[in-house]
Image (tube, rainbow, N blue to C red; front, side, top):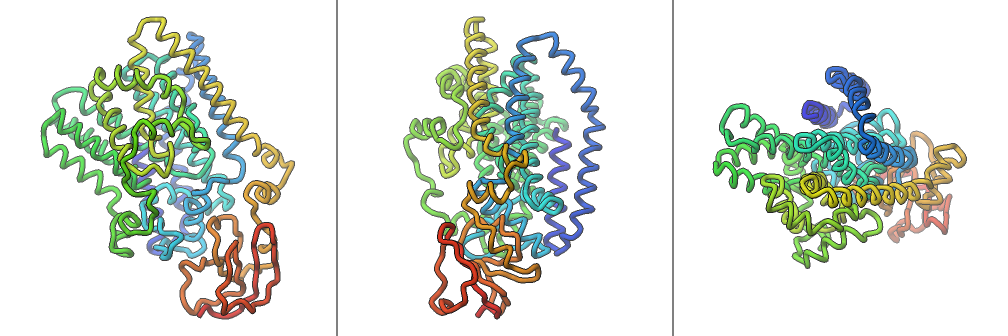
Length: 515
């Protein structure tokens, strides 16, 4: 898994390199090479043989078999959501739209203005999306890649759990994590949180291998520590917020080894991996972590210390992306019976809770998602050592919760079935669920450039466009499209050739250079 993570990181940075030199036309060759590399890893690891061995073992344990069936059902339900059109707000705002803009421009660049300010932040997963859009512009393959990160995260957690637990308890640990509603929702959208989670599970796994014995200074142990830092660096390259995990590891290094040099190594290699993104941001904005500290983000992104119990409660009742109720039901056991009794992993869970509490809460449960695997593992460790009655209770609660969560996600995803089965077109589906207007695209020629004035989610505009937030002077446009916005007074006399009072979209003939 670590080898695969390294390859993903290298591939993402190769895409970034092509984009920065304006050679995105070479993505086809790079994409094919990347696919062959993944196939090589699959063959080298003898994946099919391992699957057959796993299957033979499952047939000997009915409970393990049932847990695996639940995991497969969850994966199948997630796949239904993936095969439908993207509806996620952030995906349509910038996770997919930025790669689309890069492809239209043939290069990767910083987009100024007040709309795409996230173009300065680390975007490793968006580099993968860029390649998928090169082959399938509709975004389905991008969604499949994020779904795959969910699979990989579950697999990485299983391998980690197997070091401490039996196969049955390892599968139960994975079920608690993977059947969580936030994982199901993230799995069907082209976000980046599951990619971050995958890298952070590997960072934790390598870190635990380093800390299990006290020969911290041996060459192999230092290598594990550096590899863990590289994995965390890839997580930071995926989402800047992963920097919140850095002090967790640094504190644990100092607690266990008491060597500042090891903490320095970890800090250095974690920051070296996303360094190209920091340099890119500094060159264009003067701030290596733009838009943080820039004043662009609203007050909800500020550090505000609130009631921690209220913050935890919000993780369970938010309608869009709650975490599994298993965590709520057994939270006292997790905190009181796990953090203090299970050494390194217990302290990691406790520190992750503390530093999550210090981060902004704008992302709901998404921001705590990378720590849920460790929570699941700690629950598995705690209950595997309990008397039989408590073990059976935990098993029943987890399976019942998984069935409820799977059913809920199926009900949420079944709206995609008509478009997947071809009963309705994608246009009809998006008109219903996004109130999106496709008519203007039919009036715009292939060579025309359109200025979009206003609007937010631009991914489904299938024509050449530039948004007014980053338009340059003396750029020639054939049309101006307004999306729920008013034109400046000096352009009020333009001829309107299309208007839709429902979607509030208007299309005007412009035919001159932007002043």
